[in-house]
Image 1 (cartoon, rainbow, N blue to C red):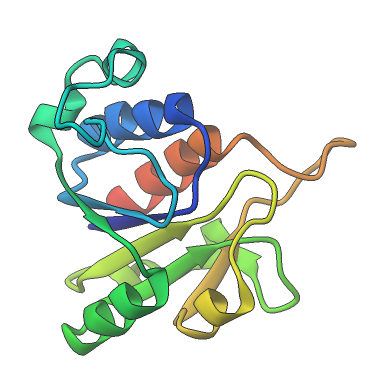
Image 2 (cartoon, rainbow, N blue to C red):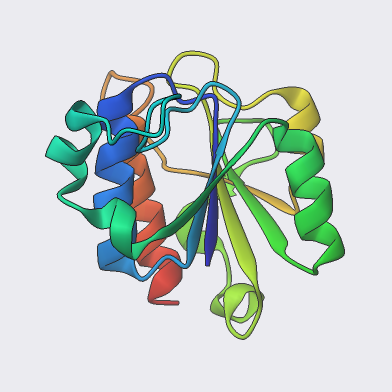
Length: 157
């Protein structure tokens, strides 16, 4: 399974996602737009990142990619099933995604910005839009927490 992080702002969220991705067996993470990488623009490891990731940036392959839309187009051509995670009119609860839909297929999870989520142009490229139903008063979870829930669910499908 592959992951695309679209304009995630927090280096701590991204570091946490790397650590969870390692635990869930994620093959590769694409860091798109403003999403911070494990290294800064000078090629030095970001200490704030590795404090949270605990070295997962060494065990999970990653690549910086500017345009999320272009990347998703490329992945679709490679026959990936694009699974966006977003609250949307077209979304389904993540646990209702059939196991047959993801088993024996290349799949890609897409997570968006902490405030703005995923843009309509990104959602148009999705094969399915998944959401985590909220039972309390808050409308959403932290992106790294949401990633953990969805990644482990899909990985164990």
